[in-house]
Length: 168
Ligand SMILES: CC(C)(COP(=O)(O)OP(=O)(O)OC[C@H]1O[C@@H](n2cnc3c(N)ncnc32)[C@H](O)[C@@H]1OP(=O)(O)O)[C@@H](O)C(=O)NCCC(=O)NCCS
Image (spheres, protein in one colour):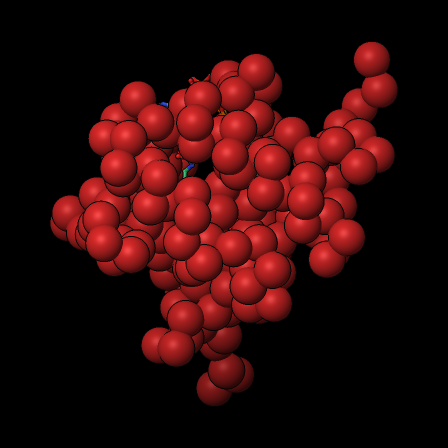
């Protein structure tokens, strides 16, 4: 089988990314949410792929036009790095795809914005992020339309680079 390619997503990937998001949410995340929460998550424009690609650096793993995993990051207004839209295709879960992508995305994000990385985790994914060194700092809600979606605020504080010593 051909190896999955890591590449930056473009606007021509919108359809494939939307299909992946739906597949991942319905197949994996839905077990932790009510059907009403899922419907709000899937239909609200704030999770629209067009907006995501305009505001975030999004990377994908796939073959040709097919995408099996995606993850992105953007700078928040406060200057922190926010992880966005981490999705793995249901039938590809547990094969290290999210880890491979996040190794790349976290490295790119923190090279350009050293400091902490924040994210809002879905309920079922908290353990995945904890394994990567994130810690939960509180429950939160994403206000998507009429149904608030339960999530967990998480943060990973990266070790600061050693300050340069100046010659005496
Ligand atoms: C959470 C998610 C991204 C993990 O993707 P994945 O490719 O299956 O993860 P990996 O295979 O890289 O897993 C890495 C490690 O984390 C563990 N892990 C994976 N998902 C986990 C979870 N939900 N809880 C606890 N541990 C988890 C794996 O067992 C693996 O452990 P190991 O290193 O000991 O083998 C995927 O389940 C997903 O897309 N979920 C639905 C969408 C979603 O909720 N995304 C998060 C948005 S914030």
